[in-house]
Image (cartoon, rainbow, N blue to C red; front, side, top):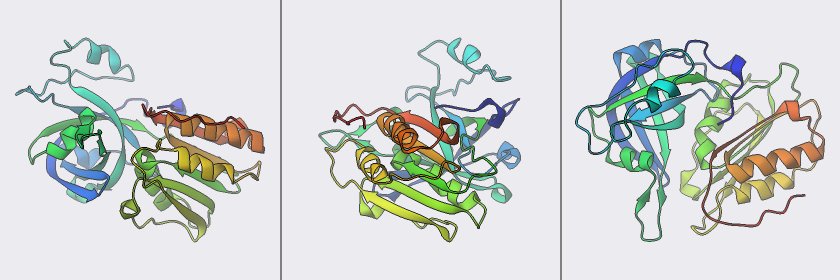
Length: 275
């Protein structure tokens, strides 16, 4: 996940918590709600505020966590023996209620050819029970809209949906622009608190064999005129992020006005023409 140093906390805090509940929020999303005494102090910034999530391994009774201090979290993390090192993955705050010290985390549910769950974090989320321990390391924002941006363009697949939702509810209400949001199924749509001047296009993949992000990229390529004073945020599957940025640069948007980040890489193959 790409990051801008000035948007990251200088002294990232580690917050411990435990699961309150886990439920299937939409057909493709498992929502886990966590709580913890220290979450009251989580410095939530809205937008696409993200964190590194640490999970206990399935075979563990004790939840082993490194002493994480400062920005170089990986040194103490990788110093832990692999067989007891907690699983680590990057997630965006899906919802935060400081008065209740509760945070929602959305996990995309991917299934294999036989319907089996794939991905350690999603498997954990679907099996999570109240009281299961977690920890998260604050990482700040990626969204970096210049103050003089005339419009905002957000493009994402389902892994970026929490970012999309957080950005839209955090944007000034006079913002204008467009969102292209790809999801696996129509039932994965949710209400989005978008400013009146921001249109939302839902792109429904609805094909288990399709490469995630390819449909959003195709829709983006129809967006061939850009305001060079605008700002774009393109995240999700790595090809969507990289090729989406390439398209926008060729359409005339300066590189410095594009934030792009490959949240994950699909093993499915699809030739994507570079235009």
